Amino acid sequence: MRIDSLRQRLRGLGALPRHEERVLRLWSQGLPQDAGRRRIQDFLPRALREALPAIERELDALARLHSVHAGTDGSERLLVSLADGASVESVLLPREGLCVSTQVGCAVGCVFCMTGRGGLQRQLESAEIVAQVVLARARRRVRKVVFMGMGEPAHNLDNVMEAIELLGTAGGIGHKSLVFSTVGDPRVFERLPRGPVKPALALSLHTTQAALREELLPRAPRLAPDELVRLGEDYARATGYPIQYQWTLIEGVNDGDDEVEALAQLLAGKYAVLNLIPFNSVEGLAFRRPGGERAAHMARTLHRRGILTKLRQSAGQDVEAACGQLRVRVQPPASR
Ligand code: SF4
Image (cartoon, rainbow, N blue to C red; front, side):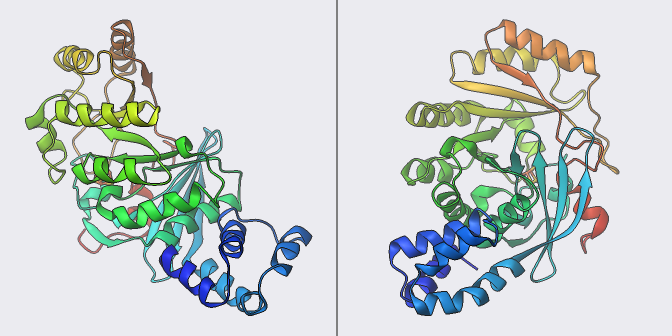
């Protein structure tokens, strides 16, 4: 279900813009079935009020919780079943954050990613993306949504932007607390500045070397790292939010002093935060995470060179943390 088609359906039942907003708020904020909710419903046109229980049942059926896997860091990985039997992962993060998926599978094929190994199975529709937030809100408060789960949001731009627009309005999430995470695609830099809700942007950089980046992200658009950073900087200055550069740290691949030096030069003076994320081991892949001291040394060196650098861990490392691992374990893709 697309949010646009849901809006049209509500209008067909007599909803004025304020009614439409109320129904979408009830749903996307996951407001409880209490007297306050009933009061809101009482002010809806009769045809809409009568149709609402059936519409809500349809919305509830978009995404159901298959299983919950708690991490020791306060995160919870949620395996979410969709109406057609496909499944995706969402991750409840510490500090009221939620990471959602935007596709079933992914076509970019990053060599270090489990989701990338199975290829793209299908796009998520905008309502299925919001439904992950609704499910999560039934468990905990959610004030930040990062589009960093399975899938490349730039490959499903219309649906992701519809979900962002809803979450940033009726969904009650601050615009800079919506984080669009991408490997970088020219369409993103054209589209995001024009939207009514402008999310923050996370760019997966991973290396300063164009040729290595093509190897690591084989089906990402051919944007050289310096071009990616130039486009990111324009967006950061236009929105007033820093770009979050993501760097999956892999031993012997992108943890050398040459990368540290090139990175210090590439990001010098940029309105940016660099997130160094040590790689999570994936069964069947030869990549390794660097030792803790090496990662800490890189972060310290970059920090001294004036680059705001954070050494992060993926949430829920102890529960199949790399993107797509949980789903693969519970539901192996046909291609494996
Ligand atoms: Fe796709 Fe992200 Fe995995 Fe790359 S890391 S294959 S973009 S899901």
